[in-house]
Image (cartoon, rainbow, N blue to C red):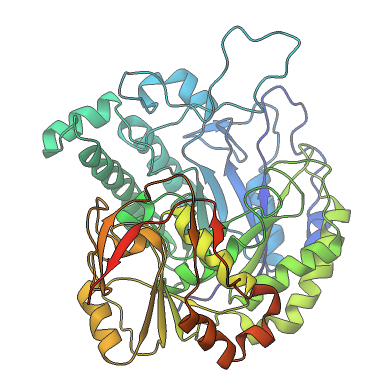
Length: 501
């Protein structure tokens, strides 16, 4: 497995052309002091931001009009002098000036309208706040891809690059721009079929990424390469089309105080440990969205998150945003350093560790089903590992299937063999059904009759099950979880099955 540093910073830098004196107060000594204070061994620095500006004297892209130094080059030099790696950030999907000057580079909806990050309301009351931001989505094809490829080659020729961190890749968003429509026709994709368009979108991004990878590795064979957005488990297209396979590592972007809580990361870590590549957990030194200025988590909160990352075998990365003047905030690196000093002591016990649980979790990659089951297991402190159709199931004692129809269509025979060999199988709700939810996908000893007939229903625990729970000591050990003997209310009605004799 390729090695990956464990104490990382993701240093954003998205600065408008209206901001003066960009990087004017950058100091190599102060930059290095912050990294040492933070116990940092890798920091993502930036070549190009969401405003389309580059932070080095590019001849291919657009240098920031208010930048007078080679900020990228000075940051890389500062890092390498103290043994810190410095992968280079480059935005793809959001690049404001490129989108304004080249509307033909923008992603389009089926009706020809622009794909945007969030809708801008019409007839907004001037006294009401606007959306925080709105970016036009760009398509990595045609002239825009050619620009990126040329600029990445320029960077590779100019700098000793440890890696590249490409941002804003949305395989789940179909594109109907003229480039894509023409290519779909030429390659035999059906522009009127949503699944065909989805497959073409995956093909476009993979082709683009493979070409960039070829350029990078021709100059820097050991460079890490990561395309952000392709490891999001809430986007089934990432797994349907195996988008994350083009990464050399898997950074799992997550802000637990913003995007779903502290129980989101464990499932993602278990999914991506399967890939045999380094896994890095990404959080922030702040509380809300990326780019928050002036937000500070308590140092103990950062330490708690970092310890959890190591416990799940992942490296640690905390996001920061450099001040437009280029000066590092020392309070930030003091807080992060409190966590990373602890990580230095414990990382050898967890970093790169793989799940060894005997309970298997059959992932569906439908977020609500998977996260619901993962939360139940985490709350009960039951460890698990993720399994897919075709995996070797011999090391598992039990396989749990979440409630999503179609998940067993490819694995029914393997699971039946697993049960015949002494394994146990627990299937929740729709997980027992084939795609379309019309019949059982596996022999569960019951015939599917149909979905619940009412808005709610009741469960009556059989005397046999109650006796088994009591004899196993369950009622003694888990008094708060003991099921009542009288019928109890289910807030949603269950599927109906009839036992087969």
